[in-house]
Length: 228
Image (cartoon, rainbow, N blue to C red):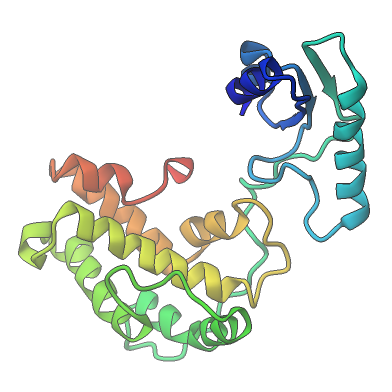
């Protein structure tokens, strides 16, 4: 966007934008930029707060009258990043003590997952499995964790393993949308990897893959870098 603004300005158009990463704006030196100290992915600040978002847009548009470019102005209000704090999301109690805790947890969240799909009308689940097949995927991950099975033993390659992790994450995050009291930024993501049985199983599997020298792509990307 910063590069394009120089091109548009050369053609006689007035440009203005919002910066979230100040260093990038300072390096690119676009003609007019409002820097907002907000979490990444939230350029207007507060979700569902029309008045706050209007103040941000007004402050940005006021820069269009400035001709002493380049201009980099700070929005006066700061929103702290909360992504590293896990969501306050209750987990279901144990239902079947004979099941592995991750499998029991998965089953306990099914109602919340179904409610979210009904409310939203879509799901990100489905890279390699639907909700009914997730238990089988967890059973395979348990083999790596407890029996030192390899990806080859499971008939998986690195991309399949990564997709399994993404499907499990999608299921939990979508269930969490119906249960959590705070779902901003990466909070559900952090909750999944830090607070759930399945998230911790994925961590252990990632560590096993590293220890045994398995495919580096699988051990690197099974879990997002922000959760490493």
